Amino acid sequence: MPKLAADGDDVLYEGDWLTIRAMRRRNGHMPAVEWWQSLDNRGKGQFLAAAKIVENTLQRGRPPAGRLDKVAGSKVGLLELRVTMSGATPPHLRLLVLRQGRTLWAAYGFTKQKNHLEKKELKLGERIAREWREEENRR
Amino acid sequence: MSERMRDALRNPEIRRVFEEELLVGEATDTVAGLLESLGISQRELASRLGVTPARISQVLSGKENLTLRSLGALGWALGVRFELRPVAMRDRLGTPASDDPPPPPWLDRLQPPAQFTYSSISMPQAGRLRRTRPKLRVLGSGEVKAA
Picture 1 (cartoon, chains in turn brown, blue):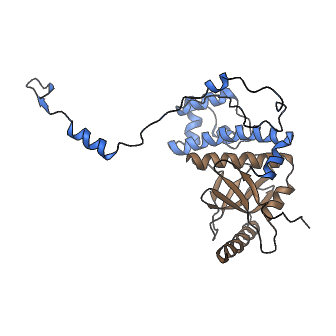
Picture 2 (cartoon, helix red, strand yellow; picture 1 turned 30 degrees about the vertical axis):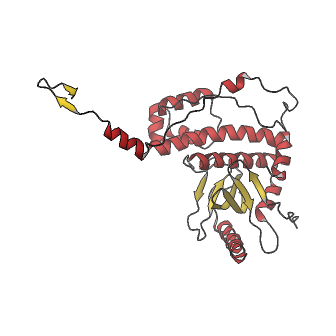
Picture 3 (cartoon, helix red, strand yellow; picture 1 turned 135 degrees about the vertical axis):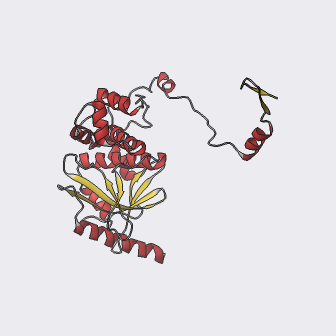
């Protein structure tokens, strides 16, 4: 059983302009934090670099060029953040997020050998995002 | 900066990957962003550089290190210049340079001077421009002179 992150410990990346925070589920788990904790040092370095690049892209209005794209078929408006770019050497690190201004809310991160987004990953991301949104609306 | 991020960047292995991937990713994302904004296809870029489209795709995937020479050639093909400007890190945790003396002052002088540009002409300015526009008179020779 992964360790639950402490309260307020949901920040995965904090730059001058952009913050990436993990969505918390009703049971207290934060799947994106658990994914981050499972990464090796290389993956953690790659994630932080990708977050900084996305920050630069959004802040300057540079086209995202495949780094952050809308997920086709997502009903809640999920975006796919590609930590490692398509065509790069696997494993591919991906994070499904929702954007709220200068904050990206991370639903679910995963590591895979194939490049395309599988249905089960999208479904899980959607479920986490929907649950998080309901909780946010309730507050 | 969050505690999690600070802890991660204190780790020399993570910090090194971060610095390497940031430079490679910024270079490839900037080239890809330029292609998109300029409306130039990877095939067209390949043709300008005399390489195969597969080579361009490989470069843009970040799979391969772009050499400085390749970056210079890409800039030439797209009409932009990539400048190399070392910027002192705000903190040097997780780097072998953490206990080094501060960076030399000339490093700051390599940064481009701050520029201020008007994004648009304001209405009062535009009005004044209209009012002060000189009346012109066309001479028989076709020459135009202020009246």
